[in-house]
Image (cartoon, rainbow, N blue to C red):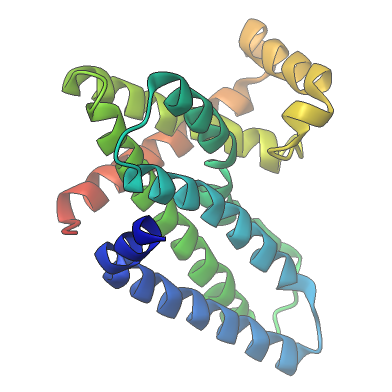
Length: 218
C-alpha cells in the first residue's frame, strides 16, 4: 500500500496530465458518436487501453525498490510484447480514407488525439525502461538496446496493422506468427514493404523519443 501511495505522489503530475489528455480524447469521441450516430471509432478506446498496459508495467517496475535480473527479464518480455500497441494507434489514421467527408475534421481530431496519447504513453514507458536498464547495463549498451526496441516496435506495428496479429497471439498461434516473421527475415526481397515500413516507422519513433527525452522534465 505504501508503495502505491508513494508511486501516486511521485507521478501525480504525469497521471493528472495523462488523465486530462485521455479525457479529452473520450469527449471528442463521444461528440463524434453523437453527431454521426456511429460507433465506428469506438475501437480506439480498446487500442488506448492496450497502449496503457506497457506504461502500467514500467510504472510498477520503477516503484519496486529492488528487482532481480530474472524478474526483470520476465517483465521486460511481457512489456515488449505489448509496447507496439502504443504507437500502433498512429496507423489508425488509415481509417480516415474509408470514412465519409462529413465532419472529416472531427474524425481527424479524434484519431489524432488518441494517437498522440499513444505516443506520449509509449515515450514515458520507454523512458522508464531505459532507467531500469541503466541499473543493470552500461549506458552505451542501454542506448543500443533502446534503439533496437524502437525499430522492433516498428516491426511489431507492421505485424499488427498489415498481418493483423495481436499481442496475445504469440501464445495462441505462435507457429503462424513465427512462420510469418521468419519468412520476412529470410526472404527480404519478397517483403520489401515490411522492411521499408519497419525502418521508416522505427526512424520516426527514434526521432520522436529523442525529442521527448530531450524536452522531458520529470
